[in-house]
Structures are given as C-alpha cells and as structure tokens.
Amino acid sequence: MTNLYRTLQLEYLDLYLIHWPIAATPGKRAPLSPFDKQELMPMDFKSVWAAMEECQRLGLTKSIGVSNFSCKKLENLLSFATIPPSVDQVEMNPVWPQKKLTEFCKANGIIVAAFSPLGAKGVSWGTNDVMDNEVLKEIAKTRGKTVAQVCLRWIYEQGAVPIVKSYNKERLKENLQIFDWELSEDDYDKIGQIKQHRMMPKEDFVSAHGPYKSVEELWDGEL
Ligand SMILES: NC(=O)c1ccc[n+]([C@@H]2O[C@H](COP(=O)([O-])OP(=O)(O)OC[C@H]3O[C@@H](n4cnc5c(N)ncnc54)[C@H](OP(=O)(O)O)[C@@H]3O)[C@@H](O)[C@H]2O)c1
View (cartoon, rainbow, N blue to C red):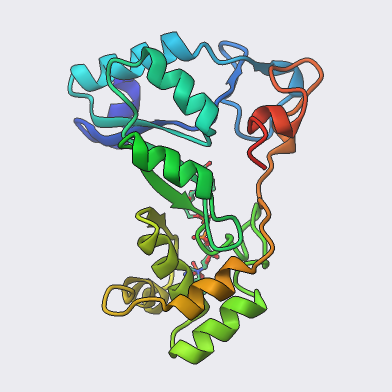
C-alpha cells in the first residue's frame, strides 16, 4: 500500500474497490489482462474484505467498496462485513439496466456506480449497441437531447452514479447537462422495450481450473 500512495502522490484515497470477485496466483499480475487462465484463483472474500476494512480504519481510504459483484456475492459479503461496502461499480446502461442489483443495493444502502454508461463505444472492451440503439436515438431526437444525455439521465433517475469517460471538452460539458430535465413515462415505456444484454460477460475469467466454470457462475445467474 505504501508504494501505491507514493506512486499516486496521495495521502489517502476517497474510495478503494475490489475490482473483480476473483484472485490470481500470489506474486503474479492482478487478473486484468493479459493473463494466463492457470493463474486464476478463488478470492478469499473474508480476508480480503478484512484488509479493506483495515485500510479504511487506518485512514488510507475514506470508503471501501466492490466492483462486478452480483447480489449473491454482496449478500455473502454483508454476512461478515463489519464495514459494509459503500459502492458496487457495475456495467449499467439502458441496454443492461441492472434492475435486480439496483433494488438490492437500494435496500442495503449500497450506491450503484454505473461503468460503461454509454456502452464504451470506441473503447477496446466496448460495444456500439448503446449509442447506436434506435429506441434511444428516437427518444433523444424527440427530447432534443443526445443519446449520451438520455443514457446518463436514465442512470441518474435510477439513483445510480454514472461514471462516464471522455477526453473531449465539448462532450464532457454535454455529459453534465442532465440535471434540468427528466425522462417521461413514454420514454420509460420505450426504454423498457429494449432487448437487454450484458456487454461484458467476462468469459476470460471462466476456466475449467479456476473458481468460475461458466459465466453463469461468475454472475450467479444474473445474466
Ligand atoms: N470496474 C470495472 O470493471 C470497469 C469496467 C469498464 C470500465 N470501467 C470504468 O468506467 C469508466 C467509463 O466507462 P467506459 O470508458 O468503459 O465507457 P463509457 O463512458 O460508456 O464510454 C466511453 C466512450 O464514450 C465516448 N463518449 C463520452 N461521452 C460521449 C458523448 N457525449 N457522446 C459520444 N461519445 C462519448 C468516449 O469518447 P471521447 O473520449 O472521444 O469523448 C469514449 O470512447 C472508465 O473510467 C472505466 O475505467 C470500469
């Protein structure tokens, strides 16, 4: 941890997350990419969370949370946590609305942070399925907004926090203009008809030798 703070030139973090509910062979690279599936290991949730809690108690981070955790994994974490996770950062947009998770988190005081709120179009892990969605385009046209604004407003109205990324000044401004209007019932009816699918099933974490033998296991059937 000390090295991390030196590298970041920070005294503390605002929020520290477990990125994925999976571990890698000790001493090897964190399981991002590229990695050998042989290195995948089950995460010892109890001891990892105890260490996260210790980071918060020591003041190294203001809050702790998780990312890519299903309701079932959150439920397990809550069964032994002395500090509950403040955030679950997950893929969420009108094409993958995360209804069940949003309700679970609301009932348990956990904030949902929505990554890839625009489907990460143009990003290596992304899809065009959100920004090029005809229903969202139609709503945007009718409302005089952009598809990005419709997505971000929808996430905001779900009580979640959109984490949108842009390197473009104009688009950064555009993405902030979502607070002085709202989606109508008609818009919700249309969004409800969009065929749902997860952009990032994360098949690369599925292995016959690892903790998850299928994407169903990784997401506890929340697919
Ligand atoms: N926890 C996790 O496992 C996880 C997984 C994936 C992503 N994330 C994080 O989530 C954050 C955002 O997600 P993301 O980058 O995957 O997806 P995103 O925010 O949905 O999409 C980013 C892409 O959208 C473009 N964009 C932004 N605003 C736009 C607008 N108004 N109109 C048109 N295009 C627009 C950006 O291009 P320009 O830069 O050219 O505007 C960029 O190509 C990132 O910080 C990422 O690291 C976390």
